Amino acid sequence: MAKKNSAKTDKKSKAPLEPQAVKERKKAPAAPVETPVEAAAVEKPVAESEPAAKAVEATAAESEPAAEVTAAEPVEEAPAPEPVCTSPRRSVAFIGSECYPFVKTGGLGDVMYALPKALVKQNCDVKVILPRYKCIPWEYQEKMIYRGAFNMDLCADGRSYYVGIMEYVWDGVVYDFIDNEEFFSSGNPYTNLIDDIPKYCYFAKAALAALNYMDWIPDIIHCHDWQAALIPVYLRTKFVNTKLTTAKTILTIHNLRFQGIYNIPTIRYWSGLPDYVFNKDALKTGRNDANMLKGGLTYANAITTVSQTYAGEIQSAWYGETLDAHLRYHAGKLRGIVNGIDYDIWNPETDACLPAGYNTSNVLEKKRENKRKLQEELGLVQDDGKFVIGLISRLTNQKGLDLVNAILPQVVDDYTQVVVLGSGDKVYEDSFRYYENACKGRVCANIMYDEARSHRIYAGADALLVPSQFEPCGLTQLIAMHYGTIPIVRETGGLKDTVEPYDMRNNSGNGFTFDRYDAGLLLDAINRAKAFYFDQRKHWDEMVLRDMEKDLSWENSAKQYKDLYLSLT
Ligand code: ADP
Ligand code: GLC
Image (cartoon, rainbow, N blue to C red; front, side, top):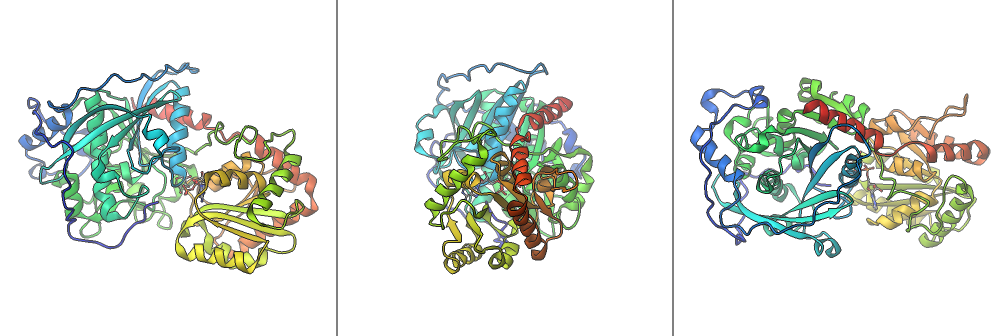
C-alpha cells in the first residue's frame, strides 16, 4: 500500500510527456452555477468562491464529450443478472484504486471485487471504475474493449489530458478502466506520494468525466480510500453543473492511516480545485498542507468504514490519525459496515490451489493432508501432529509484527511451527528471514506476495495470527475461519467484531483474543490456543466446524450498503 510520505516539496515539476491526443474541446453553453448543498456546510465566503465564468467553463469542459474524439464503439452489454431481491433498483459507480484480480495489494482489492458482485444480487446496476495500470496482467488487458476517449483539463495551468475508457464485463459487473500512460505506467500500483498525488487527482476527475462522457448517471457514487476521495469534492465544485450532480456520494475508509497529504500549492495545482476548498473545514490540514481524504469526508453525503468498532475507534485520538475531531464532527453521517469474503474465491471445497479440497464433513482428515503438503512445499519438518501457526500479511507496523518478533523464539518448539507469508518493510522481512535461519524446519518465511500459496496456508495451518495494532476490518481472519483455521487476534477494529473469544464455560467462540497491545498478552493467547489444541482436541475440532459454518459472506453487508443507498436516494 502507498505510505504517507513526510517529505514535502514545494511544487511538483513533472516534465510533461507527449499527450496522446491533445486537442481543444468544444465548450458547452454556460449554465447557471448553483451553490452545492454539501459545499454550503463548508466555509465558503462569497469573495472566495470561483469566478462564475471560470467555473462554468471548467464544468462544461468536463461534461461534454470532446468533439473530436472517436465515437464509442459498440460494447458488449452486461448480461442482465437475475435479480433475487425485490428492493428497488439503484445504479452505483464504484471507484477505487485496486481490484482483484486485475491489481491487488491488500484487502481493498478483495472488497472492490466482491462487494460489487454482491450488490448485483441486491438489485444494483454496478460499474467499477479503476485505473488501467500497466501492471494489470495481459490476460485481462487483451479482453478490454475500447469504449471511447476524450481530453480533459486538470491542473491549474489548463493543460489538456487524455482520458481513454477501456471496458471489461464480467459476472454482471462492468469494469471501466481509465487509460492514461503518463499516470498509470509505473508502479505496482502505488509508487510514492510525489507521483501518487497527481495520479489520483487525475484519476478522481477522469472517473467523473468518464461517467459524463458515457452519459451514465448513477444514483450513487461510492468512493474508496484517499485515492478516490477527491471525487465528492469535484462533484460539488467542478461538476456542479453536469447531470452527475444528482448522484449521492459515499466515501468508504478502508484504512485511515493513508490520507493523501501534501502541501496545498501542489494539490491545488494538480487538482485544479478552487481555492475555497482549501479551508480548514475541508482539505486544509496543519499550516500549509492539504489532505485529500479529509476533503472527501467533508463533501461526501455519507461516510462508511469497514467495521462498527473501527467506526467508533477512529473518533478517538489514539486511532484517529489526526482526523478524529473531523470525524466526530461528521459522525452523523458515519457508520461501520463489516466486510465479508467472496465464497466463490474462498471455498475450501472447490479451491483449485489446494492439494485436498474439503468441507465440514471431512475437514479434520483433509486438513491434515493439506498440512503435510504445506510442510513439504515449505521445507518444514513433515508431521501433521505439529501445531502450525500461519501469518499472512503486509509486513508493516499496522499488523502487530513487533509483538510477533518479540515472542517468536518462545512460540516455536518441538511441537510448533510458524509459517509467514508477506512482504513490505525491510525490517520485518529481515527479521523473519533471520528466524527462518535460526529455527530451521520450524519457521518458514515466505517473503513474497503469492496468492496461491496464501490459499494453501489458510488450508494447511491450524491457527492464524492477526495481532494488529489497528485493523479496520481484516480479511485474513475471515478467510482463516472459513477454512477451519482458528484465528488468534487482538481485539481491535473488525477483528473484535468478527472473532468471538473462546468461552470455556459454554464452549462457544471462534478464536483466541487479547486486548492490550502487548507481546506478553499475545504470547498468552498463543499458549492458550496451543494448550487447547493439544489438550482438548474434541473442543478444538468443534470450533473448527463452528468457524467454517459461520456466515462470513457478503450478503448481509451488501444488504446494509443497499439500505444506505436507498436512504440517500
Ligand atoms: P490489508 O488490506 O490491511 O492488507 P486485509 O486482511 O484486509 O489486510 O487483506 C489482506 C488481503 O491480502 C487478504 O486477501 C490476504 O490473503 C492477502 N495477502 C496479504 N499478504 C499477502 C501475501 N504476501 N501473499 C498473498 N496474499 C496476501
Ligand atoms: C484495509 C484495512 C483492512 C481491511 C481492508 C479492506 O486495507 O487495513 O483491515 O480489511 O482495507 O476493507
